[in-house]
Structure formats: structure tokens, C-alpha cells
Image 1 (tube, each protein chain N blue to C red):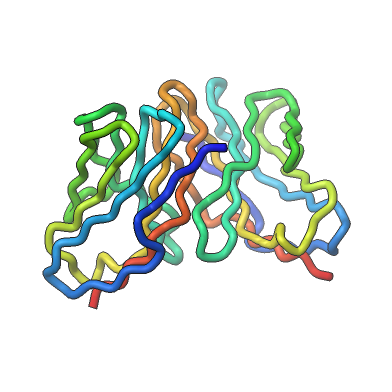
Image 2: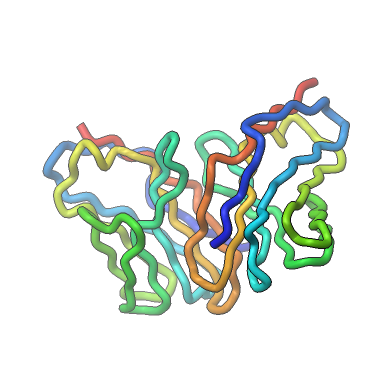
Length: 109
Length: 112
């Protein structure tokens, strides 16, 4: 599976959009980009995933660049409850999720 | 909504004890997984199962075993708990052929 690079931490003001970047320059054609988040002392929560098209659901939007070497998770109106560690994962056909260190997002009032 | 539950949120055991961690999912998922999460090491896969009575080793199976007698239940067993098995244990499940894994709330195990 391709490796990912994310900033260690980010801050965002409550009510503003949070844009979390992820680099995955070695991604293969059949690998998906997944985003999870983990709120302190809880299990990881699935957010969204995509292959090459941009995706949107009730939680977030995922923007994948045309060359697929990077992506951005967008939380359109961040709330204090969105404070968490966000993991970007690139995953192929095997079955284990390789979680890196992630980005610690702090939403501030 | 997919629901994955784990038998305990917090557990304290003594060195040498046999420990059972239970995981149950209610969405008829074929695949189930056990991970442990430690600071600075991320999530590491211990064991996974593609079907009832099937199991596969993950990256760090030493000191652990698993049991999958029913589709909805996947148990992690520490035959003789040691202090280096103090960790957060996470169970996950997914549909066969679907990559999205859904996680339980985790069990924080302390081995004294």
C-alpha cells in the first residue's frame, strides 16, 4: 500500500471550513483514498473514501487531484466536536488498514 | 448504521492471566479484525478472519490467538497476559469485497 504524508497538527475556527491535506505520491491505480477520524479514547470513525472522483457525504467532502498524488478532506462547517485525529489511508485489495500518525485537528471557539 | 460492540471499555488484569476480548457486529459482515493501538505506533493488525472458523495472522500475532465460531462474533485471546500487552484493542468489521472497515469503541487493557 502507498504511504501517506499529513501535517502533524492543524487548528480551525469554529464554523469555518477545515481543509486537511494528504500527500500520497506513490498511489497505485487500484488504490482508494480513505479518511477516518478518531476522537480521544474512541475507535476510529469512517468518514469518506474515493478513487479518483471527488466525493461528498453528510460528513465531509473529499477532493482528489487529477494525478491522484494528493487529496484534501473538507469539513465545511467545523464544530468543536470535530476536534480529533484525522487519518488519511491509501488502501489496495488487501485487508488491513495502515493508519499513520494522522493530523490532530483542533477546532477553536 | 453498522454497530460493532466490544465487551469492555476498560479492563485490568494481572500478568499470567488468560484474557478474553469479545467483539460483536450486527451487520452480517464476513470480515472481522483485531488491532492494537499504541502511542507513536499507530494501529497494528493482530489477526483477521474472512469467515466463520477462518483466521489469518496479521503483523503482530505473537502472544495472541483468536476464535470465530459465529459470524457475528470474533474473540481475541491473550493466553498469558504480559505487561507489554497493555494497550488499546480495537475490533473492526467489513463486508466481503468492500474495503470500508467499521470500528468498535475499543477496549483499554492494563496488565499489571
